[in-house]
Amino acid sequence: MGWLILLFVLATLVAVGLMSARTDWGGPHVNWLDGWTNLLCRYLHRLNSAAIDLPETGPAIVVANHVSGLDPLLLIAASRRPLRFLIASEEYHRPLLHWIFRFAGCIPVDRKGRPEQALRAARRALEQGEVIALFPHGKIHLDSDPPRPIKGGVVRLAAWTEAQIYPVRIDGVKAQGKILAAPFTPDKVTLLLHPPITVTGIDPKTTLEQITLAIETPSSISLS
Image (cartoon, rainbow, N blue to C red; front, side):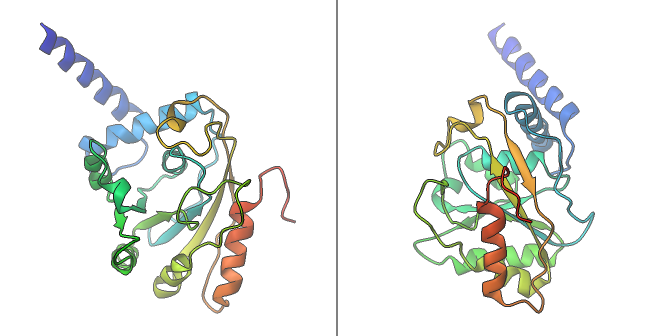
């Protein structure tokens, strides 16, 4: 009887997730997680309904400030296309979560070894028309932290592949600085979506400054 109850609960979770899914990540074995991500962000985090204005096809790069473990889920909920995240290898290999990261197409970054391998993998994904998502500060960075320059890999990827960069500012996360607690802490999150940045013909330093301004300026402050 216990096994039947467990199977019923699992089947219900999958069914509800599939009904709420809005993005095809490659099959129902992972799409149901997209549905639960949408439900979590909509009802527990009261995420505003704005969607990142990604092209229907072709490469694109999504960048955002990084304040908690909730951030990737927020970007997923705001996207109508699958996002291939660049994440630290130690996070990628976390027990129980590794299979989710693998099915979602995450790209592990060996920050202490050969990070260039991740850039090459991301470049191949962009050349195949996929969407890459990353947090260019390289780690959680709060507004109250000392200034931290963003990493230049995002500009290199955009220059190599002519993919536009879509900056997103995340505000309103209550459990800032937390990895596991943030997704389950109720709050009201706002995503400020900026116009895409085209790298072609622009000095890399200027592009980095544009990205920094977009993702580090709170949504309550106008950039105009």
